[in-house]
Structures are given as structure tokens and as C-alpha cells.
Length: 227
Image (cartoon, rainbow, N blue to C red; front, side, top):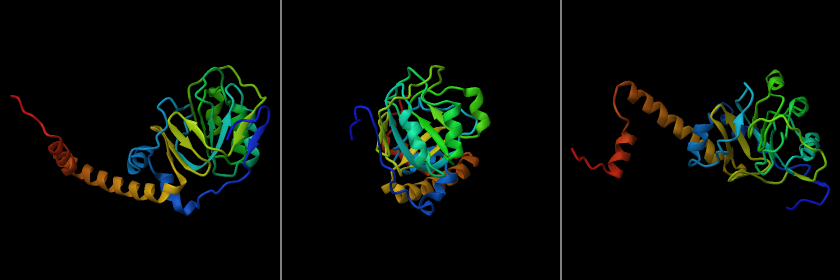
């Protein structure tokens, strides 16, 4: 979908997955979720938390903004539902902050669970008091214009990862991972498998031994001993 020349194009609604299908991911770490779906879906390392609150999970509400302009993000607030994670595409532009304390306060009032911004944030001293997890591509004081155009509810690209509205977004201090809506069951099963494997590994490490999977991996690679 391409930008209109001047207007904001919005999908007012889209399928959100039933919470029961992904509820297990609410308490999951982003790294385990990523490993459980084949090490896919992690957003770029440049997208970092700028608030003390970091842990969240919820369905994405995607917005594509024009660089240096957050009119579409503001317009999207009227369609945000409680528990949504606002994912703001900005083509990685870092010439102006895309969000600040006023936007975050508005999002919090709408029940938004977190904000992920592919651009800088500002008003950092004020954000912690709002209690909403905010991740952004850096921090800078310059503010955005509000002229549009933009897209609401359509897929956005954050680095190499495409995020669609309704995908599940999981975040914590390690960063953010995206679970495609049609792969939620696979991600949940993978999460369980990784947790079970890591629990067994912790027990083995506690005994001072190497876990079986590590021995098998190194054996498969092969080691040439030269001494």
C-alpha cells in the first residue's frame, strides 16, 4: 500500500488473536521466544528501551509515519485498544524525535501496553513517571511535524523485520521479538521446548558438567587437536 499524497490511510480494524492463544508469552523472555521460533523476529539492536519499564507482550497496532512527522501515529490513537502495542515505522529516520511525553501519555490513557518506535524519542525525564514501556531508536530533542501522510493498520518494516497489525510483540531489557499471527502456536510450542532444554542445562551446569546438546554440537562440528 502506498502513501496518499496528503492524507492518512487507515484500516480501522483487523483480526487480533485471542489472548488465550498467546497468553503464555506474557511471562516469556524475548530471547527464549526468539530461540523458540528458529531465532527469527528480533528487531534491530538499535531499538532500545528508554524507560525503566520494559517487559510487555501484546498485539501490534502498526503505523507508518513519514520521517519527521507523527500525524499518523496521533490519528492511530483513536483505534487503539487496551493491550495493543503501537509499532511506529519511520524508515529508521533519526533527524527528529517521533514521540515524546505527550504522545506516551495519550497512548497510556487509551490502554496501550507499550510503544515501539523506529525513530528517536524525547522527554525522557518524564517518561518513567508514565509507567509505559517505550522502545525507540535513540533519543534527541527535536520534535516532529504533524502534517502526514501516513498509514495505519498496514504492515511496517523495522529494519529487516516486517510487522503486521495483530502480530504479537514481546519486549524486555534484551530487546523486542515479533511473532507472526499465523505462527503463534509454533512460537508457544517452541518457547516451551527451549525452556525445558534450558532447565535441564542449568541442572547439568550445576553439577560441573557440559550439557549433552553442547557435546553433540561440538562433536558434529569436529575439533582438530594440534597439541
